Image 1 (spheres, rainbow, N blue to C red):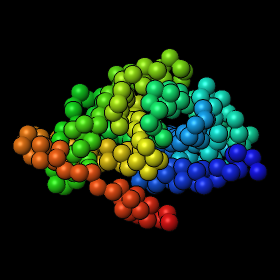
Image 2: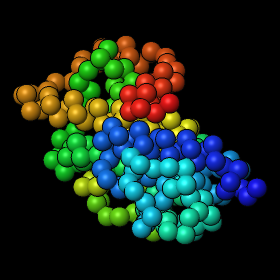
Image 3: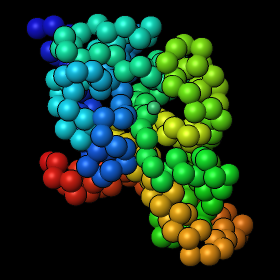
Image 4: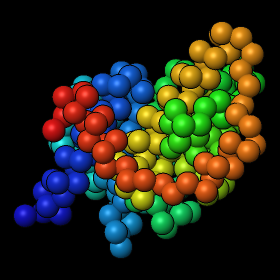
Length: 240
Ligand SMILES: [Zn+2]
């Protein structure tokens, strides 16, 4: 059995994460990809693009290809190509050995904030502490709307992201990352939720951040398990 065939469970998890993201409308049509690094190897699995694909919400295990750290396809269907923006993934994995998964998507509401010079504010506390934590500590930004289609651009994005969990890319979308596929995906879902609440609050009037005192009380709070959230979103969109 080839390495690619042995990686079926990892490809199935990535495909499921793509479907969750697509079905929740966190990204549109064919735009977006999630990857997973192979421990100890300069290889990653990633959702492919190209003539054989059907869009992110219909991703199957055979839509996931094996790619090396230079962005070359190593294994996968002949009608599928490496995403143009594979360098988002390879450059982040090279820069941050602790990362296992990287996600890139084009959520419309988050993108609006990158083009209107309005910050995502910490507007709520107990409503969703994990989202608040992401606004408090986890966000970075990238000022250019170009495709990250080569190593030089990938490196400058990785430098902008530094050690953060999520990056808002001007006129483009988002990149999130984490120690697992589930973590990178939940971070993208949470970022989309933060943007949605901020968007509606700006529409209503004059949104005000919660107090410093309230923020401090959440900084002391321990992070809970992400497993129930992952299970919930999977079931919500009809995944087991
Ligand atoms: Zn993109």
